[in-house]
Image: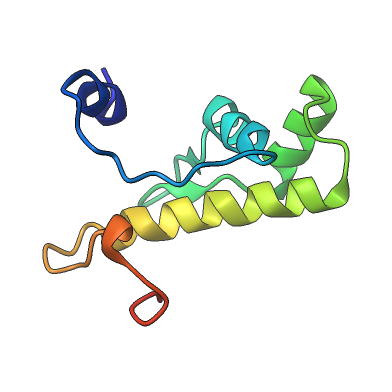
Length: 100
């Protein structure tokens, strides 16, 4: 069970943004997976994997969608690495003044 599912079942306030038109990009990232194994540590899913996913699933057809998905995967990976620091600010608590 994922942490998200666990929190939802417990009735926690997740403070997630409401997405309208872009929800399909989040779903595409979840299906594709934002991370790939690397030599020393996980790395963000990169262009070759995203391009193959877009062709195979036909979920993404516009160049900006592929660019956005690549940026989302990179952001996910960066936040995961930042979260390894026990003193890091949780992503949900970041605002424009504290965002990296």
